Image (cartoon, rainbow, N blue to C red; front, side):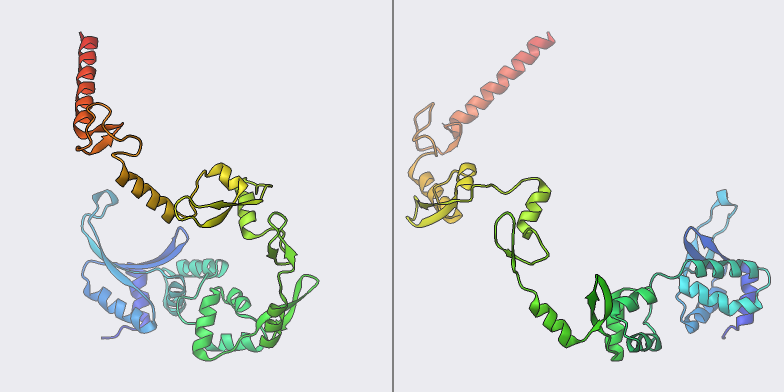
Length: 313
């Protein structure tokens, strides 16, 4: 069975709510049996309106001892569509519907949820608007304009030509390519001297370093060194040598040297246990083997317990 607009308007007058909650427009119908709401949801689906049904639990504090089913329409453009269809037939809720439509007119929809109309995109493209300008006029994202225009086969203008700092007219694809090719890195960074674009003053690295508050070191002279592991020659900036005192050309050589040092000695700083002089038991920490280190920690714990008992006494 299909419902008519007159029946839905009468049902809304009796069992519905049209209003604004916060910044959301809502139309809600409530009913204990769900069968009627299922028919109402079918009516909404035929109109292309998204709605959902959920169970509202009993709440004695709100004078609702029994639970009910509710059908809700909350998308702004769906609410506007339903109000415009039911407005000629509403009686009790007519003022509420007019108030909601007036509020939606003052607060336009920020984005189209469905596809953009082909006629609107074709008109804007014929008038020479770019995709970004069309997105601003249609209150949606530029990607949505690009996606729908590509599906419809509509070609928008690309870019602008600027005169006195203002966009005068749109550029063709060939003009845009010529302009991009004319951009060359003719300037130099004020700090490091590498080539940059003419409109910039610093490269990206120097700019980030300036924001963090760590200026670039003035001494950028390099010094040639010889790796103590592989014998290769490498360059290092003097300021880096002051911060990172190392004699290896790479992390691989540094890790290889540490591995060889561990294999050649009992530990990195000693050849035997400082307490028992053994080299058969593995090293743990503080120049001690496993047994000596455990005995030292046990003794330290006993001393700590004795001092705690003396303080308690």
